[in-house]
Length: 177
Image 1 (cartoon, one colour):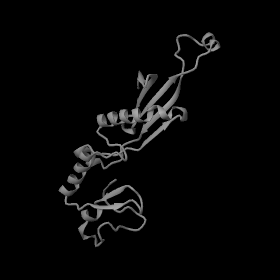
Image 2 (cartoon, rainbow, N blue to C red; image 1 turned 30 degrees about the vertical axis):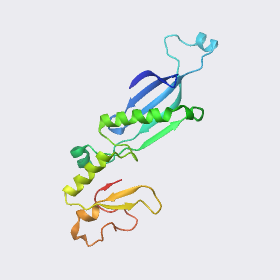
Image 3 (cartoon, rainbow, N blue to C red; image 1 turned 90 degrees about the horizontal axis):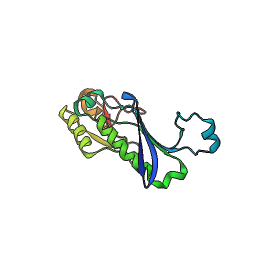
Image 4 (cartoon, rainbow, N blue to C red; image 1 turned 180 degrees about the vertical axis):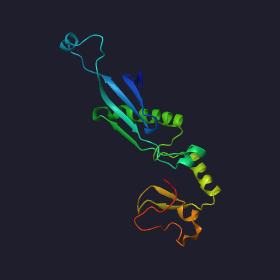
């Protein structure tokens, strides 16, 4: 756990990084708690006052293919960004997203929805190098995300049409989304 003081748009915040190892990490911004004279007199002066959490970025565990992660360092993580309503227009979310990208780069894991062109190119070359044909298909009609489906090409004797797996299932094999 790392804690430091940062300034964002001339406002002071406490920045906390909680590293959960393979389970991901949390980035948290705190403001100093409002202090009253009663709180100062009744509280132990050696104990720091608790802060008020104003923003949190949670990045979950990498859920990519283990072989692909080991070969090219390519993976995905689930991200959740929360900012307290009265702090939404202060740029805290953007600042936390930048910090999350730095943390993810240090761990060699991609952020969900934030695929970098180099990572996507490495994933494509990994699958094509192993004899796969990539089929781009939407997650569902009118959905902005595209799934790169390599499962049909990895199993040429299955008799299935490429990109058409068992209804209701994503199919066998690997997917990159």
